[in-house]
Length: 381
Image 1 (cartoon, rainbow, N blue to C red):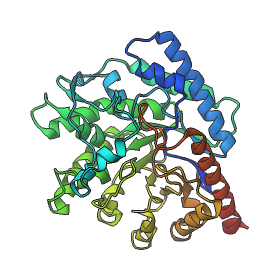
Image 2: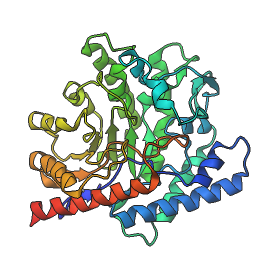
Image 3: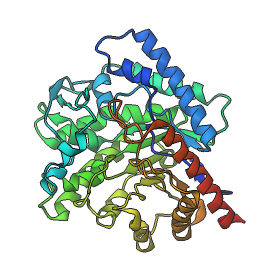
């Protein structure tokens, strides 16, 4: 994993806006698989080129071929054949009645990924070739492009366990372990290809506000977090820590977020993950003040912090000077070489919905890069 040795490096969280024709192919009930695969490959090449042109140093494939960061596992792993329409996201209606209805006005209701898979059988790979295709597409797209390195976003053990209900394994603990057994193959395949493994783990933050834990002592949530972390660390065995980055966030959706768990309450458990870098949401109005946490919580030696210095759910294009100020706050605490500038979350979490107008996404990433250049001038002269 590259470090900011001469200047502040830039990255993002993984998913990017998909081209409209690719979205149509992903959502299609029937499609020509050869056409789909070819379009994914060209879309990855386009996404990598645009990232490089925007000034992003550590790039991804944009998750071009994935319907969402959860639904892709259903397509590749046997056992997730069941489906439920049960809503499993944050419910802001409890504090602000009618919020969901208001938010959905004018957005339509045709989200093909609103339902969730259910585990109804033993977990085992059924399409590992799709994983290899992801790797091959990204590596092909990197040829002739000037970037520092590349990463592949992968669903965490915990987010799969929390978002895909278990109707097969005898206990939750057994289910978590079974997920770890299959996902370790994905993590290893990415690492063995020479790419950075990014573990997407929003459950580490979001699920404290879910009904399951909301009214329980924080210690009960820590117990569940440590179960996820133990299983994840098992799945990451034999992968060098410097090839792993761990992303946590409070959900890629605009809303009041008044029940969000403070970073201070969970940061110690987050740092127990075997990773070389920790990507943390840090720019949205509910958590932008939490850079102060790192004044009291020391980043472990040799680790990298990737704070989100760009919000991923609004159409504001942050001013480069604001981006630079945010970077400087972290660099002065953690050390300039230990900071990479990132984004709060992905811009294309699902192929069914977009929070940010795609051309604005690229303008935001350009502002991120310019802000990193401004900060670098102050930090290195």
